[in-house]
Image 1 (cartoon, rainbow, N blue to C red):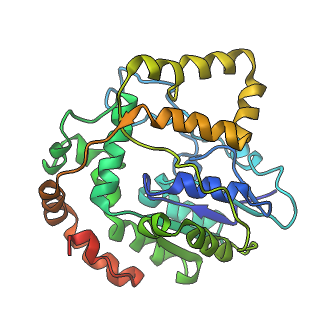
Image 2: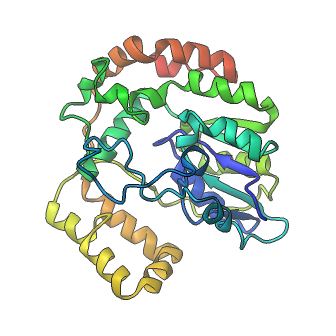
Length: 308
């Protein structure tokens, strides 16, 4: 049975989708066709296929996840001998079960983590949910109010507690199996960033992926009619998928067509700039302790995140 020998465990909205795509392009790498399987956190769970009255706040909305053991390992059955095998599930970073389940099943697995300024990450997550019409509240500043939905859902405020989350991974795996990288480095020099990852998982680091497309962008929809046509769940995508599902797969595999479609979607999004004062307030009131301790844990200077 083919099994993953590396995992991207997060953080969400920190470049994990881009990294997943860059890895999938490498001929010596096999990536799960399902991004965010969440298997090691949600194995055996019943999935809600859509929003349900029993779950109005979307705590259990994970219809894309793979929760059946056979279905999960079948995702890797087509991997070729010698390929590095991986998947990407940001839920693993903060999940309660994942770290222990992965240690049991994949004790030698290599773990890749990409971290982003926690306020910027949360702001991007907020506008990702705005794009989908699922924002936790109308005002981003509501995240300062402890005890509300922003603090109850794991993928909002709490996902940015990087030190707390990573400490349990370092407690369960040797440090040499964990690669912590920064979103800032991905933005600054994506080729050097991805080369470092290739080297870590043991494939040719000189391969050059297509780095031109910016994946998984967040923002408020500018034109709702246009979004109904070409959005993530737009009429065109749903219609073609219903009638010609193989054509959709071909379009996804065609770099130029896919890039153009993503650019069209992104052009219909806008994201107001985060106010500096609000950002600093969130750092000081929510994330300061986590950032200070994270610096020592991973050996990186993160004063920029603190506003220094």
